[in-house]
Amino acid sequence: MVTASPSTRKHALDAGLDLDELGRSTGRSHIAREDVDRAIRGETSGAAPVAGPDHARYWAVDHAAYGPVHEEKMGRVPQLAAANLAAANATIPQVTHHDQADMSAVEALRARMKPEATARGVKLTALAVHVKVLSHCLVAFPRVNASLSPDGDRLILKSYVHVGIAVDTPHGLMVPVIRDADRKGLWQIAAEIADLAARAQQRKLKAEEMGGASMSISNLGGIGGSAFTPIVNPPEVAILGLTRTELRPVWTGEAFVPVPFVPLDLSYDHRVLNGADAARFLAHYAALIADPSRMLLPRADLLQATG
Image (cartoon, rainbow, N blue to C red; front, side, top):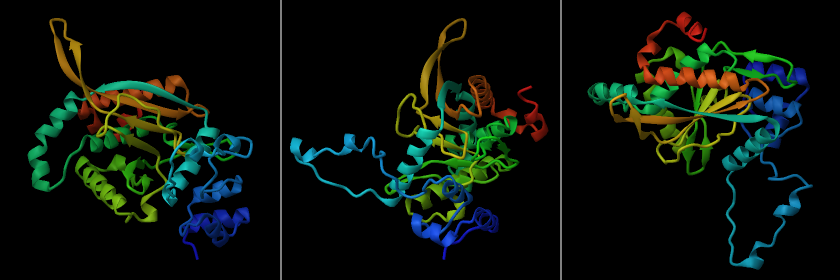
């Protein structure tokens, strides 16, 4: 028997769906509301072919005719990710807006707090600061903290702020979620990121620790790159990509000085957000990164920060 929240069970009952049958068909032991919505739309949350019948001929190639090959079985997590990303890419009219943010103040803040971090036994990473900054931006820009209804005629605005963090693991990409990130301090966020990332590597995440994010972060800063185009993870309407912080020369009026900048890549669903929305969102994000003290503003002030 599958597990599901009471609200998900009611949603499935109203739609005439059998949750146990849905669990068997998808191979899942826990069913979320998103799974029910996909079933209602006639989609599958399980593995899906890379291409439909009309395009299968492009993959129906005898590769061994050209040289030695061997096969590797795709794991369940990569298969699920492939199905969801393919569906997202086919459904969402996605655009990516690029910007950058001055990390000088953040790096200075982390340096000042390093002794306390050591005493607490918590590593204060740049990612923790990014999660906190993103949570503030989602308060200031409610349309980004939203989801489109399955029929596309309603925008569901969320009163909570949950931030997903993509974790690269040996068994595939996993996205645990920091719940109520806007109401948590940097120390708690940093500790939760470390805990969730470690348990993701060990495949010890609980079902309730994934799903339901307001928006996600895909961080490639520890690997490299200067920009990329992350794919929006439905039912979210945007995703933030981060790559490696680099020193760049900035003219002060008297001389060039090295300044650390982090590239920002915001992919968004153009059905909900437009280019001006994305530009304002990243400009606000960059302003908070450049001056982290602004994160101390009361929530009411954050709501007026873009006015």
